[in-house]
Length: 220
Image 1 (cartoon, rainbow, N blue to C red):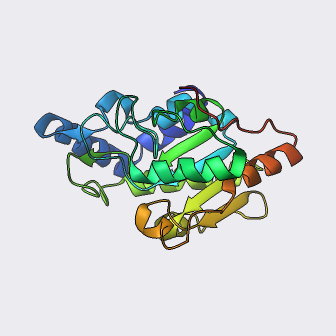
Image 2 (tube, one colour):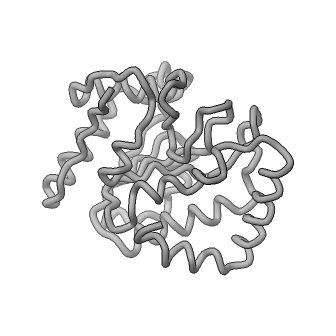
């Protein structure tokens, strides 16, 4: 897992993580779990620790067949673009002149240094939130703390109350923390999401810190 290797090796030796993996392994044997087992840690595979520039925090994976592939808000090509991601695209369109693609695969962002991190990394089919409170939250809490303490000048995008609560311990003196409502239709239609300009703000910040900005445009 590239430069995440040492961090994940340390966590994997802790009692909570051992119990978590035992539980998850049994779940994959007994029922339909998403994403596919080999894709659970895709966020780290595609976005090495030493390349992280932006963190977009989600809640848990999509729970429909063929959707989740280990990146928050992202779905496999050929899958209908979910409502929250459609609203993300609309905000990008007005913020950075984004051309909306015909798919919802965000791997290209991850490869540029956007850590698309869900708080919980697995879910039962058709049962959102079903793998909450089994240990994933502790794991992702450690990831966020590690990034906050060991890195500098990362942009954290925290959308909605859940993500904002998760990010309370981020050091705002070292990093840019952007908050807004969630892009889900309920929140977005109440005026809490659109026009937050997080994507242009992130790139301005990265540029000012001497870093390469993110090309948010996705290929078709």
